Every structure is written in C-alpha cells, then in structure tokens.
Amino acid sequence: MRLITFDGAKGVGKSTLISALASALHERGCAVSVLVEKTLMAQHQPDILQDAYARLKSERSASANLALATLHRERRLIISAGALARASAEVVLMDRWYPSDAVFRERVDVDALIEQNISSGVMVPDIAVAVVCDSRVSWQRACGRVRALDSKVIDSYYQHRASSKRFERAARDHRWRVLRSDHYTPGELAGQLLPDILPAR
Image (cartoon, rainbow, N blue to C red; front, side, top):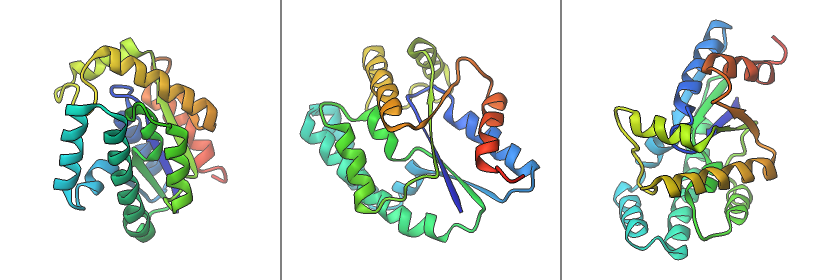
C-alpha cells in the first residue's frame, strides 16, 4: 500500500484534486481508496475534540493549540494502526494528515509537532502533497463554496493568509511535493502525480 497525503490551506482545491487523481488511478486499473482524516478522527471520542476546538476558538493560545495538536497526533496513531494498516487498496489517498499542523497551529513550533507525529509512529506518507495557491484565490474559493469557509480555526482573511504562508514555508523546509492549484487544473495536477505514484506503469 502506498499512502499519498494532501494538505493545504482552505480553498486550495485538495478535495477536487483527490477526486481527479482517484479517477485517473481507477482508469489505469489501480485499486485506490480515499480516506478523510476529519471523518476518521470523529470516530474516536468526538466530544473531546469538539471541546478542544471550542477552547481554541475562545483562547487562541499556544497551550490550546498544543492540546489540539496532541489529540490529533493520538488519533493519527489510531488511524495508522487501524484504517491504514487494514487498507487493502494499492494506493490510499488521504485528505489531510500531519502536514496540516503547519496550516492550523499558531504560536507553536510546527516543526516540533511534525517531528512528534513521525517519532511517535504516525504513518509517514510515501508522498506528502502540499497544495498551494495565492491566498486571495483560495480565500475567495473557500468563501464561495456551498459549505462556505467551514473552518473551526480560521475566521478571517488575515488568519488565512498567515496560515497559507506558514504552510508554504513548511512545505519547502520539509520537501513535500508542492503543487500550485492556481496554475493548473485538477486534471493537470493529477497527471503530474501519476508518474510518481505508478512509476512502473
């Protein structure tokens, strides 16, 4: 099983890219599964997560960010040992994973959070895809969706722009695979990834 993860700020087009890539993989005879971190995390004591998000909304403090990051890491360990360990698909596409800490965690050492995920045993993706675009474009997209911004953490364009910059910096530092969704269509981006996912085909 190959794990490909997709992270980025709100509105960059992760879900659309994942859908396009899943279709392209299916067309090539690849058994592919799409998982969503948020959905899998909600299966494990969702009330505790909701309380942590509520605390973060009211405080926006380093300690609240760290508490939420810890809960996310613990659930990623459960997902790694559960849904990912049991996956029978040739390729698993995961909508968000630990690189998203670089998007949503403020006032904390994001690099340390990422290292804690890896050192604790959270599954490391074969390819960590960082989907990025101009923050003005992703903000407009996010606010224009049917579900609107749909964020438990980010309320304003200022926060969105800061989180976008923070994520792009982390993507460069950690050498994640960066794809710009303001330069290419989802189908074109999927085509860029296919040779890395299925190099022998």
